[in-house]
Image 1 (cartoon, rainbow, N blue to C red):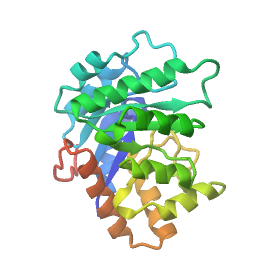
Image 2: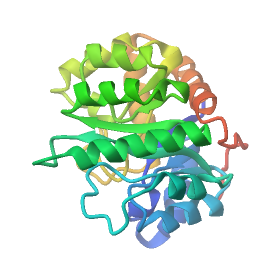
Image 3: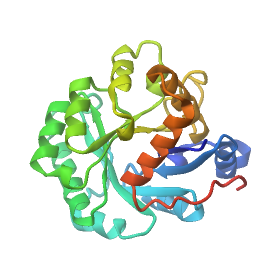
Amino acid sequence: MSLVDSHCHLPLIDGGSDGMTGVLARAAAVDIEHMLCVAVDLETFAGVIETARGYDNVSASVGVHPNTEESAEEPRVEQLLRLADDDQIVAIGETGLDYFRSEGDLDWQRQRLRTHISAARESGKPLIIHCREAADDLLKILREERASEVGGVMHCFVEDWDVASAALDLGFYISLSGIVTFKNALALKEVAGKVPLERLLVETDSPWLAPVPVRGKQNEPAYVRHTAEYLAMLRGEDFEELAAATTDNFYRLFSLASRAALVTTV
C-alpha cells in the first residue's frame, strides 16, 4: 500500500553519492508515491520549485518559515501570489508562529503569518502551518484572518488535544511526524489516537526527526513508512487502511498535487 510524505525538504537532504536520485529511489522502493517539498524562505525557493519540476511525484509549496528572521526579502502578498501561480505549487507555507526558537518582540512573525493567510485566501491554496509554543496566538490569528476559508495542515504537530481539536474545527488536518514514535512523546501519542482518520496526514519533515527505528539518522521520505506503521499500531487500525486514508487525505487537501502512478525507477 502506497503512502505520501506530506512534508519534506528534499534539497536539504544529503543523498550521498546517489544524490536526489537515490533519495527518491529509496522512497519508491517502499511505495512512497508522492512527496510535498516545502519551502522555508524565498532565497532557496528556486531549488524547491526546480525539484518539483524535475519529478512527477514531487509537488511544492511557497512560503517563509516563522524562524527565518533575517530573510533578505520579507514576503509580500503580491509576491507570494506570483510565485504560487505555478502548477507545481500546491500550498502556501510553511508559515506560522514559533516562540521557542525566536525571542523578543515577535510581532513581525505574527504579521508574516497574516501575509501568508491573505495569499492563501486569494490563491485558494491551503496553508502549511508550523506552531511551537505559540498555539493561543496562532489560533487567534487563524480565526481573525478567516484561514478556515482555505484550510490547511498543522504540520509536525506537537501540541495538545485542545489545540488539535480547535484546528480541526477550523477545517485543518493534523500531520504527525516521527516524533510520535519517540518513547517520551506520551501526550502526542494521546492526540494521535484521537485525530479522526479522515483528517490525518503523515510526514517526515526530513532531513530532521527520523522516526524509531532509524532515530538519530538523517531522515528522508522513505522513513515515513515507519511513522505510518507505528500510527496504525498505536491507533489499533489496519496499516493498509491507514495508508489509504492518509494518502486520500493528502490529495483531498492538496487538490493540485498530481496523483501519478507510483514511480518505481528514477
